[in-house]
Structures are given as structure tokens and as C-alpha cells.
Length: 264
Image 1 (cartoon, rainbow, N blue to C red):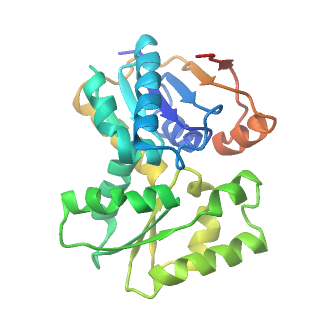
Image 2: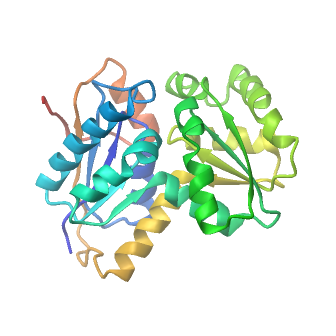
């Protein structure tokens, strides 16, 4: 089935999911939607986020997507059901993918989760992990400064390292063997975070986990693209902020082609 995979996010963060999909599923066509005019979502009400999620879902369904991926942790936490109710195609989200990844990886059954304050306060990762294994102990930490540091490009900066050391202190005082990176910005900090927590702790990258889950679902449902032609990638945004191209290309790990602006 050569219809595209639809991926959406409140801004550019979901491009780390697109990058992981491009690497894991190199022949799949992808349509990305980043709501750059209305980011951040984390400070908005549940009703507002649900309304935005509904709008974006309807738009992507018009693009004839065969699968929807909610790449925004905030939307996944509060609006998954809204998207699921609207969608005739399968809906996957980063929280569920990250939770599955953590359950598969942990041996000690002590898991740390880091994310934005909105995601951590929603308790969505804890609930998702406990759906698969109610006996896992979960220790969460909100990391409000990571998103601006990543968007600044300070991926291996002393300030970022000090910030990370401060943040992970509270989860590292427990015997965790797994740390879930519960924000799509955080995969860019993976090398730095691995250095801070040490190699005894396995990092679960929700973008990579999402790509694995997508590959599994496409295979099981026989929805993978049989074509071996170079795929089409289209990127829709609701605004083109000044640094969008720079930040977007850093997240994607390549040039950001075919960017189109949608005006509601």
C-alpha cells in the first residue's frame, strides 16, 4: 500500500520521529504536520488541544494517509481517544511506543521517565507502562529547560550537561536500569544523557520505539509499501518561524524539502 504515513506534532519535535521512520522504513511515503503557529501545546487546556488534534487529524485524513502517528507527547497524553474516534486508519502514539519499549528493556523493573512538565504531570507514561506491567516502579522528572536548550542547538554544551545532571539526580537515586526519553526533542540529547546516567542505564528513545512499532503494525496488517522507488516526503506547517528551517534540519538530520504552509 503506497499511501503515506501521517505524522503530526505541535511543532518541529516530531521530526525526530520522521527521521527514525526514514531510517527504519526507507520506502514509506510520509506526510508531516507541525502546528508551528500554535506551539507550545503544553500550556493549553485539554479542550483546546483536543480541538487542534481533531483539526489536524481531519487534514491528514484528507491526504489519504494509511496510518496516523501522534508524535506529540502532550497530544498523545490528552487527545489520543479523540484522534482514534475520528480515524478509520490505525492510530499510534509516542507514549504507547515508549512505554512498550521500556517494558521490553527493563530487567530491574525500575524505570525513570523524563519529559516536559505537561507530559510528566499528565502521568501518561506511568499509566501506559502499567498497562503492560503493573509491577514496574516508575520515577518521573519534568525537565522544562531541555526543549529550549535543544532548539538553541546546545546539544553538547556545558550548560546542558549541568542541567541534565541536576534533572536526573532525583531518578538516579533509585536503582533504575531504564530511562525513557519522553519528549521528541530529547533524542538529540541522547549522547549527552547517556554520558550523564552511565552505560548501566538503557535509554528508550521514543522516536526509535515509534519507528519499530510502526514497522511491526505495517507488517502485521500487510500495509507496507511494496514499491522500491524513492519515497515522497511532504511537510506541512501552520507558520514558518524565523529559525524553523535551521531547527527542522537539525531534528531531521538532513535538508528539509517540500515545506508547505497551511492557513486554517
